[in-house]
Amino acid sequence: MGGVYGIGNPLMDIVMKGSYADLERLGVRPGTMNLVDHDTQALVLGSGTDPVRLPGGSAANTLRGTAFLSGSANNPSVRMWYGGAVGADEMSRQFAEGLSAVGVRPLVATVDAPTGSSAILVTPDLERTMFTHLGACRLFGEDDIDTAVLAESDWLYTTGYMWDTESQERAVRRAIGLAAEHRTAVAFDIADPFVVERYHRRLVEYLPGRIDLIFGNEEELARLTGFTGEPEGLAQAARRFAPIVALKIGKRGCVVASEDGVRRIEGFAVDARDTTGAGDAYAGGFLYALLTGESIDKAAGLANRLAAAVVTVPGCRYDALDGGAILREGLG
Image 1: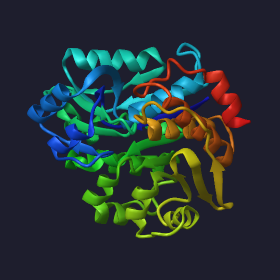
Image 2 (image 1 turned 30 degrees about the horizontal axis):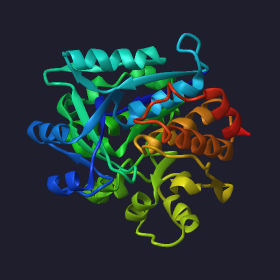
Image 3 (image 1 turned 90 degrees about the vertical axis):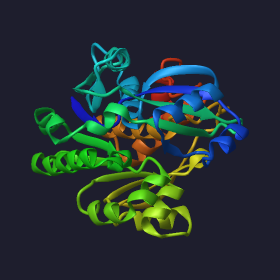
Protein backbone atom coordinates (compact mmCIF):
# COMPACT_ATOMS: atom_id res chain seq x y z
CA MET A 1 0.00 0.00 0.00
CA GLY A 2 1.48 3.34 -1.07
CA GLY A 3 1.40 6.44 1.09
CA VAL A 4 1.55 10.25 0.77
CA TYR A 5 2.44 12.77 3.47
CA GLY A 6 1.03 16.21 2.73
CA ILE A 7 2.19 19.38 4.44
CA GLY A 8 0.11 22.52 4.06
CA ASN A 9 -2.02 25.25 5.60
CA PRO A 10 -4.97 23.77 7.56
CA LEU A 11 -7.81 26.14 6.72
CA MET A 12 -11.55 26.03 7.10
CA ASP A 13 -12.81 27.08 3.68
CA ILE A 14 -15.93 29.24 3.51
CA VAL A 15 -17.04 29.20 -0.14
CA MET A 16 -19.56 31.89 -1.13
CA LYS A 17 -21.12 33.48 -4.18
CA GLY A 18 -19.68 36.90 -4.97
CA SER A 19 -19.66 39.60 -7.65
CA TYR A 20 -17.12 41.53 -9.71
CA ALA A 21 -18.16 44.63 -7.78
CA ASP A 22 -17.20 42.89 -4.52
CA LEU A 23 -13.69 42.20 -5.82
CA GLU A 24 -13.30 45.74 -7.16
CA ARG A 25 -14.41 47.20 -3.84
CA LEU A 26 -11.92 44.96 -2.02
CA GLY A 27 -9.16 45.98 -4.46
CA VAL A 28 -8.04 42.49 -5.53
CA ARG A 29 -7.40 40.71 -8.78
CA PRO A 30 -9.88 37.93 -9.64
CA GLY A 31 -8.58 34.37 -9.36
CA THR A 32 -5.87 35.04 -6.78
CA MET A 33 -5.12 34.06 -3.19
CA ASN A 34 -4.79 37.11 -0.94
CA LEU A 35 -3.35 37.05 2.57
CA VAL A 36 -5.53 39.27 4.76
CA ASP A 37 -6.00 40.23 8.39
CA HIS A 38 -9.01 39.28 10.48
CA ASP A 39 -10.88 42.54 9.83
CA THR A 40 -10.50 42.32 6.05
CA GLN A 41 -11.69 38.74 6.05
CA ALA A 42 -14.74 39.83 8.03
CA LEU A 43 -15.55 42.32 5.25
CA VAL A 44 -15.30 39.52 2.70
CA LEU A 45 -17.57 37.27 4.73
CA GLY A 46 -20.11 40.07 4.77
CA SER A 47 -19.95 40.42 0.99
CA GLY A 48 -20.70 36.83 -0.07
CA THR A 49 -23.84 34.73 0.05
CA ASP A 50 -24.78 31.03 0.38
CA PRO A 51 -21.71 29.91 2.37
CA VAL A 52 -20.45 26.31 2.27
CA ARG A 53 -17.88 25.27 4.92
CA LEU A 54 -15.28 22.55 4.28
CA PRO A 55 -11.89 21.51 5.70
CA GLY A 56 -9.54 23.01 3.16
CA GLY A 57 -6.33 24.65 2.19
CA SER A 58 -4.69 23.44 -1.01
CA ALA A 59 -2.83 20.43 0.41
CA ALA A 60 -5.83 19.20 2.41
CA ASN A 61 -8.05 19.48 -0.67
CA THR A 62 -5.53 17.41 -2.61
CA LEU A 63 -5.33 14.67 0.01
CA ARG A 64 -9.11 14.58 0.30
CA GLY A 65 -9.19 13.98 -3.46
CA THR A 66 -6.70 11.14 -3.17
CA ALA A 67 -8.73 9.72 -0.29
CA PHE A 68 -11.94 9.95 -2.32
CA LEU A 69 -10.43 7.83 -5.09
CA SER A 70 -8.88 5.48 -2.54
CA GLY A 71 -12.29 4.30 -1.37
CA SER A 72 -13.49 3.44 2.12
CA ALA A 73 -11.91 5.38 4.97
CA ASN A 74 -11.78 2.09 6.88
CA ASN A 75 -10.01 0.18 4.12
CA PRO A 76 -8.23 2.62 1.79
CA SER A 77 -6.04 1.52 -1.10
CA VAL A 78 -3.41 4.15 -0.19
CA ARG A 79 -2.35 5.76 3.09
CA MET A 80 -2.57 9.52 3.64
CA TRP A 81 -1.21 11.76 6.39
CA TYR A 82 -1.56 15.52 6.74
CA GLY A 83 0.70 17.96 8.60
CA GLY A 84 0.15 21.61 9.52
CA ALA A 85 -0.55 23.87 12.50
CA VAL A 86 -3.96 24.64 14.06
CA GLY A 87 -5.28 26.40 17.14
CA ALA A 88 -6.92 24.87 20.20
CA ASP A 89 -10.43 25.77 19.09
CA GLU A 90 -13.66 24.38 17.67
CA MET A 91 -12.58 25.06 14.10
CA SER A 92 -9.51 22.83 14.48
CA ARG A 93 -11.71 20.03 15.80
CA GLN A 94 -13.99 20.34 12.78
CA PHE A 95 -10.98 20.36 10.47
CA ALA A 96 -9.46 17.19 11.98
CA GLU A 97 -12.80 15.37 12.01
CA GLY A 98 -13.37 16.28 8.38
CA LEU A 99 -10.06 14.74 7.33
CA SER A 100 -10.36 11.65 9.53
CA ALA A 101 -13.84 10.92 8.20
CA VAL A 102 -12.50 10.44 4.66
CA GLY A 103 -9.36 8.48 5.58
CA VAL A 104 -6.72 11.21 5.92
CA ARG A 105 -4.89 11.02 9.24
CA PRO A 106 -4.33 14.52 10.68
CA LEU A 107 -0.88 14.96 12.24
CA VAL A 108 -1.35 18.62 13.12
CA ALA A 109 0.52 20.68 15.70
CA THR A 110 -1.60 22.72 18.13
CA VAL A 111 -0.26 26.25 18.68
CA ASP A 112 -1.33 29.41 20.50
CA ALA A 113 -3.24 31.08 17.66
CA PRO A 114 -6.67 30.72 16.04
CA THR A 115 -7.07 28.08 13.32
CA GLY A 116 -6.69 29.61 9.87
CA SER A 117 -9.56 30.14 7.47
CA SER A 118 -10.12 31.15 3.86
CA ALA A 119 -13.13 33.09 2.59
CA ILE A 120 -13.59 32.21 -1.09
CA LEU A 121 -15.71 34.38 -3.38
CA VAL A 122 -16.92 32.64 -6.55
CA THR A 123 -17.86 35.13 -9.27
CA PRO A 124 -20.40 34.49 -12.07
CA ASP A 125 -17.59 33.33 -14.41
CA LEU A 126 -16.99 30.50 -11.87
CA GLU A 127 -13.53 31.82 -10.93
CA ARG A 128 -12.60 31.75 -7.25
CA THR A 129 -10.77 34.50 -5.38
CA MET A 130 -9.45 33.63 -1.93
CA PHE A 131 -9.01 35.81 1.14
CA THR A 132 -6.93 33.83 3.59
CA HIS A 133 -6.26 34.56 7.25
CA LEU A 134 -3.44 32.14 8.06
CA GLY A 135 -3.68 32.34 11.84
CA ALA A 136 -2.09 29.21 13.35
CA CYS A 137 -0.79 28.03 9.96
CA ARG A 138 2.05 30.54 10.17
CA LEU A 139 3.54 28.83 13.23
CA PHE A 140 4.18 25.40 11.68
CA GLY A 141 7.87 24.68 12.21
CA GLU A 142 10.66 22.18 11.61
CA ASP A 143 9.95 20.28 14.83
CA ASP A 144 6.35 19.68 13.74
CA ILE A 145 7.34 17.36 10.89
CA ASP A 146 6.50 13.73 11.57
CA THR A 147 9.82 12.22 10.53
CA ALA A 148 8.68 8.62 11.01
CA VAL A 149 5.71 9.07 8.68
CA LEU A 150 7.86 10.91 6.16
CA ALA A 151 10.34 8.03 6.15
CA GLU A 152 7.66 5.46 5.29
CA SER A 153 5.84 7.59 2.71
CA ASP A 154 6.23 7.08 -1.03
CA TRP A 155 5.50 10.76 -1.71
CA LEU A 156 5.83 14.05 0.12
CA TYR A 157 3.39 16.66 -1.20
CA THR A 158 3.48 20.38 -0.46
CA THR A 159 2.73 23.74 -2.06
CA GLY A 160 4.22 27.15 -2.72
CA TYR A 161 1.96 28.67 -0.10
CA MET A 162 4.36 27.32 2.52
CA TRP A 163 6.87 29.99 1.47
CA ASP A 164 4.59 32.66 2.98
CA THR A 165 6.32 32.54 6.38
CA GLU A 166 9.93 31.87 7.29
CA SER A 167 8.93 29.19 9.79
CA GLN A 168 6.90 27.25 7.23
CA GLU A 169 9.53 27.59 4.54
CA ARG A 170 12.23 26.26 6.85
CA ALA A 171 9.98 23.35 7.79
CA VAL A 172 9.32 22.40 4.17
CA ARG A 173 12.99 22.69 3.25
CA ARG A 174 13.80 20.30 6.10
CA ALA A 175 11.05 17.91 5.01
CA ILE A 176 12.36 17.89 1.44
CA GLY A 177 15.86 17.23 2.72
CA LEU A 178 14.62 14.32 4.82
CA ALA A 179 12.68 12.99 1.84
CA ALA A 180 15.92 12.77 -0.12
CA GLU A 181 17.53 10.79 2.70
CA HIS A 182 14.65 8.30 2.77
CA ARG A 183 14.16 8.15 -1.02
CA THR A 184 10.69 9.61 -0.67
CA ALA A 185 9.63 11.34 -3.90
CA VAL A 186 8.61 15.00 -3.68
CA ALA A 187 5.64 16.61 -5.44
CA PHE A 188 5.45 20.41 -5.39
CA ASP A 189 2.40 22.44 -6.42
CA ILE A 190 3.08 26.10 -7.24
CA ALA A 191 -0.55 26.75 -6.24
CA ASP A 192 -0.88 30.44 -7.24
CA PRO A 193 0.80 32.86 -9.67
CA PHE A 194 1.34 35.31 -6.82
CA VAL A 195 3.49 32.70 -5.06
CA VAL A 196 5.96 32.99 -7.93
CA GLU A 197 5.68 36.78 -7.93
CA ARG A 198 6.47 36.94 -4.22
CA TYR A 199 9.26 34.32 -4.06
CA HIS A 200 10.58 33.92 -7.59
CA ARG A 201 14.28 34.14 -6.79
CA ARG A 202 14.10 31.77 -3.82
CA LEU A 203 12.07 29.18 -5.73
CA VAL A 204 14.31 29.32 -8.81
CA GLU A 205 17.39 28.82 -6.66
CA TYR A 206 15.95 26.10 -4.44
CA LEU A 207 13.68 23.80 -6.46
CA PRO A 208 15.93 22.37 -9.22
CA GLY A 209 17.33 18.98 -8.23
CA ARG A 210 15.18 18.70 -5.10
CA ILE A 211 11.71 17.81 -6.37
CA ASP A 212 10.45 15.00 -8.59
CA LEU A 213 7.11 16.35 -9.80
CA ILE A 214 5.88 19.92 -10.27
CA PHE A 215 2.26 20.99 -10.75
CA GLY A 216 1.34 24.35 -12.25
CA ASN A 217 -0.94 26.15 -14.67
CA GLU A 218 0.23 28.20 -17.65
CA GLU A 219 0.54 31.49 -15.78
CA GLU A 220 2.39 29.94 -12.84
CA LEU A 221 4.91 28.03 -14.93
CA ALA A 222 5.40 30.93 -17.34
CA ARG A 223 6.29 33.21 -14.43
CA LEU A 224 8.60 30.60 -12.96
CA THR A 225 10.44 29.77 -16.19
CA GLY A 226 10.19 33.00 -18.17
CA PHE A 227 8.94 30.97 -21.17
CA THR A 228 6.02 32.57 -23.03
CA GLY A 229 5.36 30.11 -25.87
CA GLU A 230 2.96 27.22 -26.42
CA PRO A 231 2.08 24.82 -23.56
CA GLU A 232 4.26 21.98 -24.90
CA GLY A 233 7.32 24.21 -24.93
CA LEU A 234 6.44 25.59 -21.51
CA ALA A 235 6.18 22.11 -20.03
CA GLN A 236 9.56 21.19 -21.48
CA ALA A 237 11.10 24.40 -20.11
CA ALA A 238 9.74 23.57 -16.65
CA ARG A 239 11.70 20.29 -16.59
CA ARG A 240 14.55 22.47 -15.37
CA PHE A 241 12.77 22.30 -12.01
CA ALA A 242 11.58 18.68 -11.90
CA PRO A 243 11.90 15.56 -14.09
CA ILE A 244 8.08 15.29 -14.27
CA VAL A 245 5.98 18.34 -15.14
CA ALA A 246 2.18 18.42 -15.03
CA LEU A 247 0.95 21.59 -16.73
CA LYS A 248 -2.77 22.26 -16.25
CA ILE A 249 -4.53 23.98 -19.16
CA GLY A 250 -8.10 24.09 -17.84
CA LYS A 251 -10.88 22.43 -19.80
CA ARG A 252 -8.35 21.55 -22.53
CA GLY A 253 -6.77 19.07 -20.13
CA CYS A 254 -3.05 19.12 -19.43
CA VAL A 255 0.42 18.73 -20.89
CA VAL A 256 2.87 16.38 -19.23
CA ALA A 257 6.63 16.34 -19.75
CA SER A 258 9.01 13.63 -18.59
CA GLU A 259 12.00 11.64 -19.83
CA ASP A 260 9.55 10.01 -22.27
CA GLY A 261 8.83 13.33 -23.99
CA VAL A 262 6.05 15.92 -24.01
CA ARG A 263 2.43 15.06 -24.73
CA ARG A 264 -1.01 16.58 -24.34
CA ILE A 265 -3.67 14.67 -22.41
CA GLU A 266 -7.18 15.77 -23.36
CA GLY A 267 -9.64 17.05 -20.77
CA PHE A 268 -13.30 16.21 -20.14
CA ALA A 269 -16.29 18.37 -21.08
CA VAL A 270 -18.57 19.15 -18.11
CA ASP A 271 -21.11 21.74 -17.02
CA ALA A 272 -18.96 23.74 -14.61
CA ARG A 273 -20.49 25.46 -11.56
CA ASP A 274 -17.50 26.45 -9.42
CA THR A 275 -13.76 26.15 -10.11
CA THR A 276 -12.81 26.11 -6.41
CA GLY A 277 -10.34 23.28 -5.80
CA ALA A 278 -9.97 22.18 -9.42
CA GLY A 279 -6.18 22.37 -9.32
CA ASP A 280 -6.08 20.64 -5.94
CA ALA A 281 -8.30 17.84 -7.23
CA TYR A 282 -6.02 17.48 -10.25
CA ALA A 283 -3.02 16.90 -7.98
CA GLY A 284 -5.04 14.46 -5.86
CA GLY A 285 -5.96 12.36 -8.87
CA PHE A 286 -2.42 12.43 -10.22
CA LEU A 287 -0.92 11.27 -6.93
CA TYR A 288 -3.51 8.53 -6.46
CA ALA A 289 -2.68 7.07 -9.87
CA LEU A 290 1.06 7.12 -9.23
CA LEU A 291 0.61 5.58 -5.78
CA THR A 292 -1.35 2.71 -7.30
CA GLY A 293 1.26 1.99 -9.99
CA GLU A 294 -0.26 3.76 -13.00
CA SER A 295 1.82 5.47 -15.70
CA ILE A 296 2.33 9.23 -15.88
CA ASP A 297 -0.09 9.48 -18.81
CA LYS A 298 -2.76 7.50 -16.92
CA ALA A 299 -2.16 9.72 -13.90
CA ALA A 300 -2.72 12.80 -16.03
CA GLY A 301 -5.93 11.36 -17.46
CA LEU A 302 -7.32 10.58 -14.01
CA ALA A 303 -6.23 14.00 -12.75
CA ASN A 304 -8.12 15.66 -15.61
CA ARG A 305 -11.24 13.62 -14.85
CA LEU A 306 -11.28 14.37 -11.11
CA ALA A 307 -10.65 18.08 -11.71
CA ALA A 308 -13.48 18.16 -14.26
CA ALA A 309 -15.82 16.43 -11.83
CA VAL A 310 -15.14 18.71 -8.87
CA VAL A 311 -16.04 21.88 -10.79
CA THR A 312 -19.59 20.55 -11.25
CA VAL A 313 -20.33 20.99 -7.52
CA PRO A 314 -20.06 24.05 -5.23
CA GLY A 315 -16.80 24.13 -3.30
CA CYS A 316 -14.11 21.46 -3.35
CA ARG A 317 -16.56 18.68 -2.46
CA TYR A 318 -16.07 15.06 -3.43
CA ASP A 319 -18.96 13.47 -1.54
CA ALA A 320 -21.49 14.20 -4.30
CA LEU A 321 -19.34 12.60 -7.03
CA ASP A 322 -19.26 9.07 -8.45
CA GLY A 323 -15.79 7.76 -7.67
CA GLY A 324 -16.19 4.54 -9.63
CA ALA A 325 -17.18 6.40 -12.79
CA ILE A 326 -14.29 8.85 -12.38
CA LEU A 327 -11.80 5.98 -12.06
CA ARG A 328 -13.22 4.14 -15.07
CA GLU A 329 -13.31 7.20 -17.30
CA GLY A 330 -10.08 8.73 -16.05
CA LEU A 331 -8.01 5.57 -16.41
CA GLY A 332 -9.84 4.16 -19.44
